Length: 290
Image 1 (cartoon, rainbow, N blue to C red):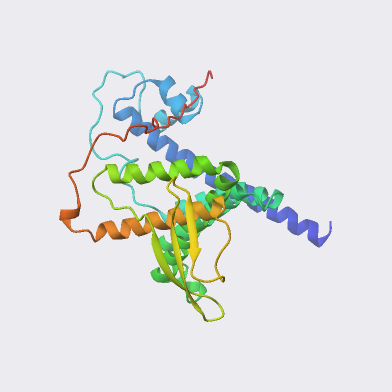
Image 2 (image 1 turned 120 degrees about the vertical axis):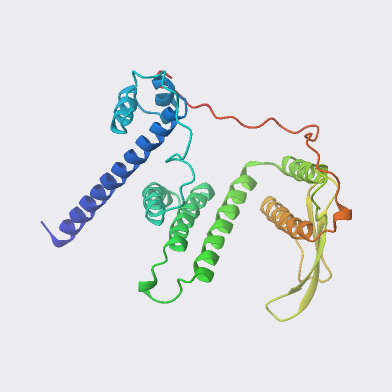
């Protein structure tokens, strides 16, 4: 056996052992949550199996491991502190989750590194890693692990997720659909009576050559983004990705401005939905027999 193949064998075994350790921790967490659900009144083994996507035998085993006798369904359920509620984030648990995500997204990225959804998933994986670093910074590895470093890194990875998700959306949706969505979002935000909307903005931009130009961002009346400058240095058509990222930036500005609004600029909060609001999405969780 060559040195290279031996190294590959050891790496493969290490990965397998790590997976087994993570699986054991996840099984323990599942048993805790299963017991919490039972103690708070969910006494159907079939329902628990369907929601957890495991077999009924697994439900019985989890409940037994937590000292629950399923034959005593009529006992009053427990109200109080629950294992699955109010638990703070744990750095090691987040790192384990990040390793699982990495095992899924890394091969996908190797298969198609240009796919924006895959790149969004990779950025989300890195965001999990950054979250673990925020919770438990590896300061023994040198400088750069203070909160101002790790939190800034987490924010950048979150921005990367948004960018790649917008890239995927830009390749999927048409101009008319994106414009209509932006227009509806604007009207829905104003409908609440509690939020301002940034309809347009004028930016002073310094270009790499050192010159200063003025750029105006707005919309064409249908919800589609417009961009114009006071010089030939800035121009070109606004594409779908441009539109989505400008709209995201305007929404951020709107939140900032809303925080600084005087109370006289606000209306009583409305609880009714804007006409035309789509129904909320639902997710079907398959049971054992589906």
